[in-house]
Image (cartoon, rainbow, N blue to C red):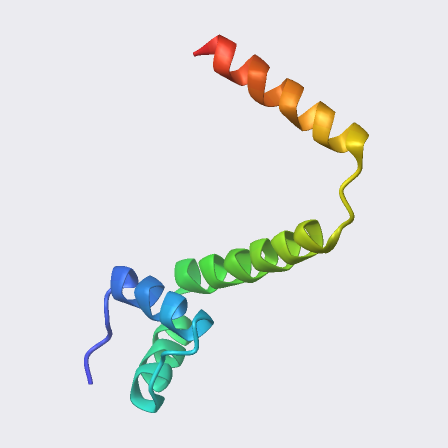
Length: 80
C-alpha cells in the first residue's frame, strides 16, 4: 500500500468526522498520520477547532454579546 497524499488524508479526516469512513480508509488514514507530522498537526487543530465551536454553540448568547458581534461585523464591512 502506497502512502496517500496529504490532500487525500484531509478528505478522509472530513469523512471520518461525518461518520462515513470505512475500515480500510480509516487504517490508511491512521498509517498516513503516523508518518506525516504535518497531517498529525492538522488533525489536532481540526479537533481543537471542533471542540471550540461546540463550546461556542453551546454557550448562551446574551443581548450584549449579540450587539458587540453586530458592531464588529459592521466595522469589518466598512473596512472593505
